[in-house]
Image (cartoon, rainbow, N blue to C red; front, side, top):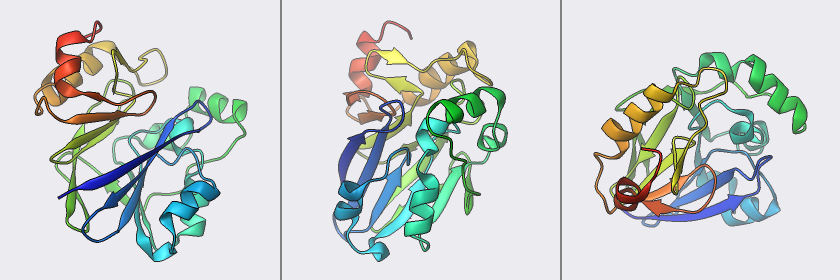
Length: 208
């Protein structure tokens, strides 16, 4: 199982939108659809190639272009965290964020994701782990080589817990008990900023 990962750091708050491709089949998924442009569409090519639109958590910068994807690729499954209902339907801080960055609402999810769920993309499986703390319902997607952490864990930093539904002790526990127990060789693809490694963060991240 191997993925090709391409990052588009161009969402409303320089959020990382990832286009991942299963190398064996060419099937694709978008992770955190904050940005959509002709560059992404060109890499997707035929609309039949995009199978999933995946969301790590319910902040506006991560789903800002979700409706553009669901309209352009109606056969793709939009999957969002099951425990993120409050933020996905607005929330005080989220409504402010949306208004500050061009508006936009999150479409209804076709599939709600919880701990242990599997996204099968060709020959690649992305396993869902629940990592609340930055928000109450945040999730990460794990393969045998990568983990897409949304705003839970960054290179030498962690997610902000001062917004609605955020909680520092919960975030710390999610990182220590869920992410830091993964293989140290896993590449971390965060919601903002550069990629890193689980092992490097365990040794060097000053926050956890």
